[in-house]
Amino acid sequence: MGKQEDFVLRAIEERDVRFIRLWFTDVLGSLKSVAIAPAELEGAFSEGIGFDGSAIEGFARVHEADMLARPDPSTFQVLPWRGETPATARMFCDIQMPDGTPSYADPRHVLKRALGKAADAGFSFYTHPEIEFYLFKGKPPAGERPVPVDDSGYFDHTAQGGGQDFRREVITMLENMGISVEFSHHEGGPGQQEIDLRYAKPCHQIRLYQQKSDSAMKIPL
Image (cartoon, rainbow, N blue to C red; front, side, top):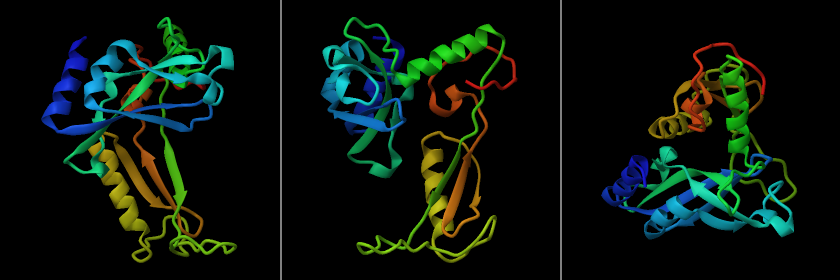
């Protein structure tokens, strides 16, 4: 194993991490997760975690079902909202075939290939995610419409309703995860909130790929 894997194993012991969540997405962007115990992590680094790829949207046909999720140690992060003791951590995974070759259905691999082609052409890709969502007053009774937490509009300062406090809590968690936030505000609709992450290269936001080009031009993927 390399230095990054050794660092993760030491961090798990020092921070009393009891559960490690291995994350990846299907081709539609839905988050998938499998939790393993610390004793299984060394094997996951060296061999990967086997799973049925035919059960994941867009990954494989039934006769190609065997796939591996191999955790990327550079994405190791303790989840701050799960508490300090015992702690829970997560890592993103690269999806591979049984022989160790990358899966062409893996969104991370697709991004790496696209960024590699862009770098070869002298370009860099930057991303600036805007997270928009609605907040409602509890769960509505069956058959009734949800009630927004406020009736405010775009950029309104809303002291009541809980939106500001919720955004503050989310931003604190994101920053504890090492994800930089540029700003947040109330959006145009009742109860509609927005949190904007800082403009950065993909490897800075989600640590997916080491981009080597220094050009600042944006290109569509």
